[in-house]
Image (cartoon, rainbow over all chains, first blue to last red; front, side, top):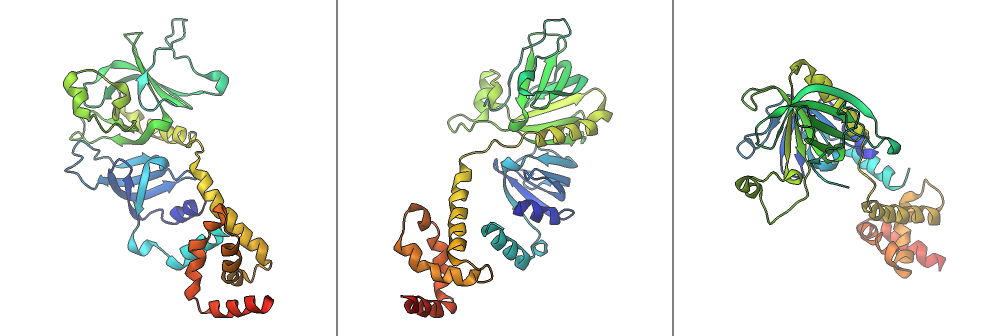
Length: 93
Length: 226
């Protein structure tokens, strides 16, 4: 549940979601659920030359299981808080 | 589990042409959208049919050809979106990407050159309702149904389990919660001493503590205890 809470804090920020099929979509994080399904708004495909057919869509829903990486805004990470939360999670508390 | 798009021809025999669902196993019909055309991959739109959205999958059935229909599980739908940009696609539609079994030997061009429609290899599907004001509603229903279908639990989980198990063990040995730092510093001796498969996993993390200034103190304490 750590990452669920963590991503919830990032709602409203600009992120890039990289899928396991190499497609990368940039957009505003609209919402995330417990399965790490991600909804993005104001999306655009990062590598448009490679995916010319791909959506110039406004919003999309991405299945959590197909996400490889989520690139965060540099100032969107509270390192101390994350460190602390990760440690608590590892202790099983 | 069948991955990707597949043919679907199971219709009720009562003339309504509705799909037969796996109701004994809890499959429910969530939404029916009539007058929907479908485009698979780069292929042209297929004549209007009806879209049935169930708690498990999408089913598109042709209104004209009773033997024609497709289905895809929500588990196989990687992404869905509303597409309204005429440059991206001529008609406003729900765009979906479908997860397919990776097959390194064949690329998509093979499928197209032979002209044979290989359903499990279709990676994209567009659903074009004649009433485009329904797109946002459909999008929301797709979201809802995707959330009803989380990934089945896989063995992958077990790796994580072992790791947590080791951490729990350390806590049990130590006792007081306030002294968690101490327990980590002290336990290398015991872990290395009784190394078996599972405990070994904890070593890399514990070794990180060696340069810690507290290590010296811990060492002394261990000696004292002996």
